[in-house]
Amino acid sequence: MNVFIASKANHIKGIVDEVLFLEDGTAAPFEYKYAEFKDTIFQTYKFQLVLHAIMIKENYNMDVKKGFICFTRSNNHIEEIIFTEKDFKKGREIIEEILNIIDKGFILENPNIRISA
Image (tube, rainbow, N blue to C red):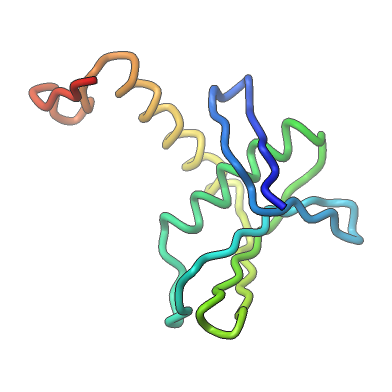
């Protein structure tokens, strides 16, 4: 489906594979991964969903409590990821770090490492 979504408040944008509207009145990001499920969810996958959830909350004015990943190389195995307030806090910290890198041109922990355009 590919839903373009953006957050003006958080200065991010992206494409969510699908936005699900659930029976409990919440919404959820749904992502397809061309990968095998090996009994673990990588943090990069989880926080991709968290960032999508932040944008869904802002755009649809709906609570987002969980997200889903479909692993297409494991017979479309679906994993549900429950979000906590700590996840959303970390997601906003990730956004802030990225914006600082873009704004200042270096990674804050090591200002000697420069990112060239």
